[in-house]
Image (tube, rainbow, N blue to C red; front, top):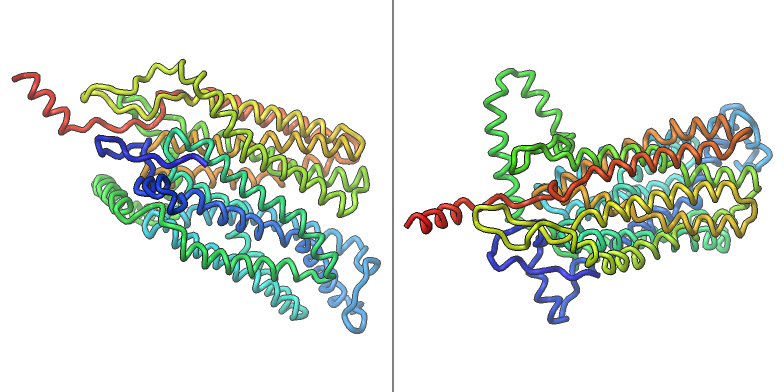
Length: 536
């Protein structure tokens, strides 16, 4: 893991300095762990608990849909035992498919709302309370899921719906956002991209473990609730761990500083809002406060900074195509090649393992090797006069852009390979390559937050995640509709469309310039003193 740097000798905060510089002493002495190291168990545990129950959730939903349909038609056998033959009717299959589609769509909308709420609360109360609250919501959701299995009829359905709603607001997208926002808080500008990649890699490793053991544990114990008991236990343990060991990444002085900036901005805006309707709209808009960061800010030279907008457009277009691709690939394998659950689990495990290796090791190593080469091309000086702005760093974002673009190209080509090959071994090789194209996710987040004041990085990250959630919401509707219509005649068409869309979205990243990076405004006190000294 990258170390956390001290603040600059001037004592002035900048994007180069993390929000927890005091942890450097702990790192150098070796007596304490870095906050980034302490974040790893949280990233692994939350991703594991988010994906572990998926091995049995589909079966639970299908069984409930079938049982309710049989009950409503008076065909439920004595004792409530049902078989696959009883559920193999068109009405049950259509209802089951509709429920799954609704859940996928709801996940995207819920993640968007959750990211907005998390950004709003965490910027006022801190990141740690929000982390604890989200873990508690997930814990409660799995508890409802367990309770639903001891109920029957519509009580079971009600408990299951409550569990699904809670999990929508504390699912993979939400937990990933929490880990990312904490990482951004405590990472310097130089280390942000490789550290984000590594944290996402550790989280993906948790997902790999869940895919590997979820089905195995359920099969060996013959108990579909065992994965929920495991998840509840892990969430309880990680709640205590966060409460006891994880430090706050957005301390009170930073929150107070951000609050003062907001009050000043609100006072300026209040002069232009005189009507009651304007104030009412302003109150409603608070729920979407992070989206304000998508409005281009003006740089020191007076030009608008479009970097966050470019990243947002890139994310929503890319997620529109990419979010549905894993599901489409699995549907293709199960329908065309008759994959059984064990083979499907191997594919998912292979995909997650290769992504974890790429994010945790390959990308940080690649950045470390290539950064000196790219750094020679930077025109920004390290030290500037008091009348100039302070440079963020001597490295260039061109390296991040190139790696992100190449990873999207790998993603596009590998999905086409995975859909075109015909043997189980070639499928595993193709999905392994898919996993090695995962670098774009942390890199785009790093590019987005590097264009704003460190105090606003959490809100920018929330805005990007909200755009990602919109793409995830639209993907089953658009790409799922295409795949459903062409799976019998042209099953590879959706993957060609996916490739064209993600490469077009990746091309937008070439609009990003180093001049759009955040640069600390000049210190007027120093400028005045320097000018006075010059005159004298």
